[in-house]
Length: 242
Image (cartoon, rainbow, N blue to C red; front, side):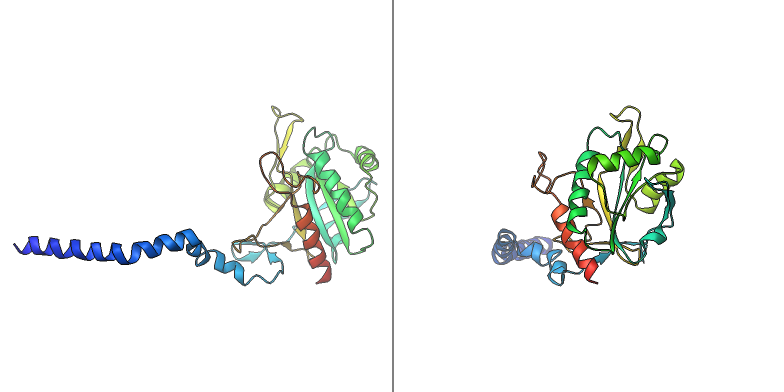
């Protein structure tokens, strides 16, 4: 009998809980308050400043590099000291996303042409073919004229290490893929002190990289992904003002 009465009391408590609290939980879900009280609250304190990208609690910095540019000049990370710059990995014979990425960067070039402390670094992932002469022709084809936009080539092992380890921007040789190479089509943003920076998303998490494969005039692609060139421009301006 004791167990029977215990069961009745437990059932009564569960019933009361359901009557009082479940409608409140449903109302919160419908109004979105459950989300607002978890991840969204993090974003409420975002002041528009750009976050540092970290790894194991440490701010990620561009590792040292030293490659030849389209004018056969040695360019290192030290040449970008004191400059805000965008980094990409591409190759000149890319049949798909690279032309879009280059056009987007030319648009950014024109936007910040008058800023001496802005630059772009484009690293080829096909250095065996993309010699300085080939890169020079590519620059002329796309209207790359800014003195601080370097198309860089050199030792392939070092370039892939820079991409996949230094920046964590995927790049790989892929013989079965059109063009023979795979890469992510992302842009990295670097501040004047060589640190990787980005804005936060709506949840307060760093965006980390910017999608370079959708034109700003397009709005979004067929998969519904929004263009990010517009916000990249906004964030470049923020870093230039720091």
